[in-house]
Length: 164
Image 1 (cartoon, helix red, strand yellow):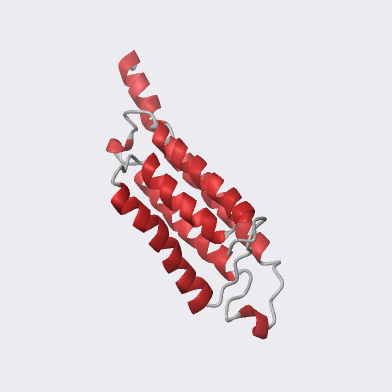
Image 2 (image 1 turned 45 degrees about the vertical axis):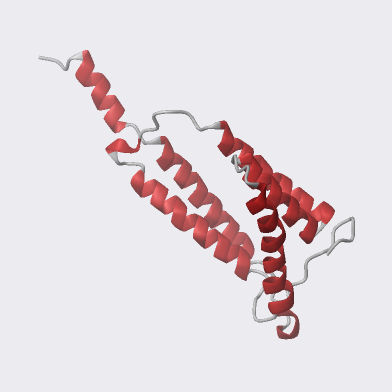
């Protein structure tokens, strides 16, 4: 008495490692490797470091990414976690906008890049109430500037246009 083909397919499917788990493990491996790289960062003198060493922020970001990847790994084994439809184009467009922001940050400078990003991202997501978007695009970068530049003393390079 053998196993029926349907039972065989079900057993193979049940034994398969979920794709999200594989992705989570790859992300965790990246985090571990990148963390090892941060161990080689030189320490800044206390007068320059402003209580934050060069490796602090990358390690903080890696920690957050590792926590999210761990949650993804754990939840990937749930029966209802199978994706029913493909990723929407808006997710890809949002990622492209983030990459464009990083490029604009170096090219245009902090203020111009933040204003453009704060205008473009809501528009990309379908927000058409410009009476809300425009004040947001002006006030959000201003608040970030006040907190980081004036409050915390963080220096942002002005970019090629010299706007900062």
